[in-house]
Image 1 (cartoon, rainbow, N blue to C red):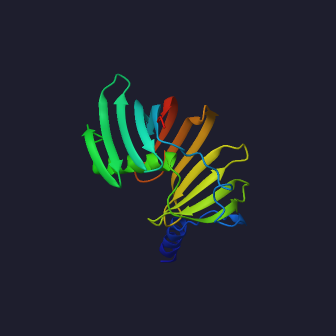
Image 2: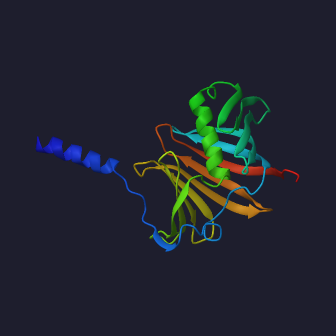
Image 3: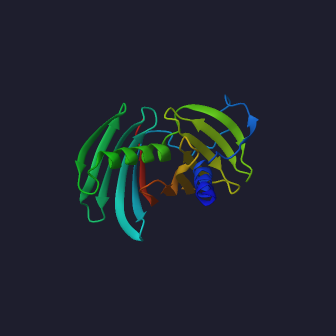
Amino acid sequence: MKLASLIICIFVLSACQTLPVITQTTPPEKTASACPNPFLKQKTTLIHAIEVHMPGGIKNAVIGITEADPATRAISCAIMTVEGMVLFEAIETDGSLDIRHALPPFDSAHFARNMIEDIKLIFFEPRGKIEKIGFLPSGETACRWRTGNSDTVDVLKTSGGLPEVKRYSGSGKVKRYIKFSGFTGGFYQSIELRAQELASYTLFMNLVEARPAEN
């Protein structure tokens, strides 16, 4: 009986996670100058060569085409094989998702919604309220955003000057971890996204082309 109680206690404690502590040094209202900002500044079309890593050592190579507008938060995206076959195409405007084309296994609404949310997390500044601006115990500059769906997003700058983004669930578990590197010509050349949920995966995105919209 004691052993069963101990096992339950360990399980509960492992499930309860807390957010990293930020030592606040800047009032949250001073956001523009204090926070790392790896996000798009204008409407841009981006083409990435993407390597997808799935559990079990499964790897796939695809081409991702994304048009993202940070002003309206509108997104148009497509996934293609390296041979040019369109596997998935969708548009989101004003929160309304329109799936134009989807082949298995990309034909579920859950996949489409997760993909759109990943794109927003990579390219758009978080929505919601900044709660803290300061430093993590490990030394990174950190801005913590509380989003409208109970998630928390930390936008970080490492000691090497590179930005990172971490998205936490309401229980404090890391759901997404994004690393940016190779800033050239106004865009990050390499982006790594790690999704840590029931269906975990990692995306390695290498920029092929970026075309800002003409004013």
